[in-house]
Image (cartoon, rainbow, N blue to C red; front, side, top):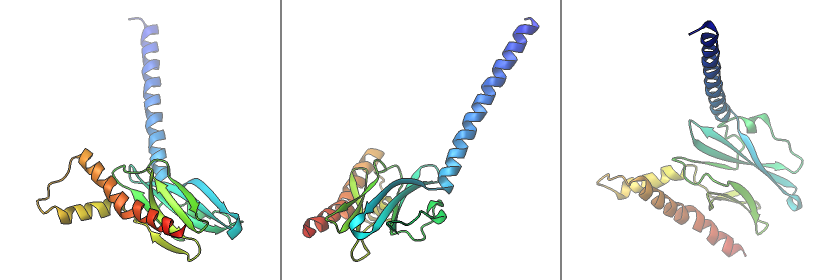
Length: 189
């Protein structure tokens, strides 16, 4: 092989290694950033009440997504603490998704001009009464609460497979969060 080809191979290997190192660096930075800072997802203004609600998210570890909801005056500014990862000071409520359940399409909305509802994965997860400033329904770790109930029911310690667990988890969230919220909202109308 002549020197020209050896030089080209060396350059190609160097570029490949630099590319791989850059990708690993970007991946590591994203994990670090999402573990240390929250991302702003939504601001919902309630003009007739002169307030706003702000929804943030971050990641704990390698994939457990958390959501945080804050209430501010209508002209209030988002503080540095609100953007700090895992900081729950001043939140109305927060919760997170372990094992990848119900993390899609997180959003907050006002129902009956009285309630703030947080949903994710197509199911209601949290309910806040704006007038009384009271959290009516919320579970910080739905998966943890689900597993706790599963362990108490299952004395043989037989763990369900992933598909069974998903179905059981959906059922638990519907029963203990979603339908409770639906019933409260229906009574209010």
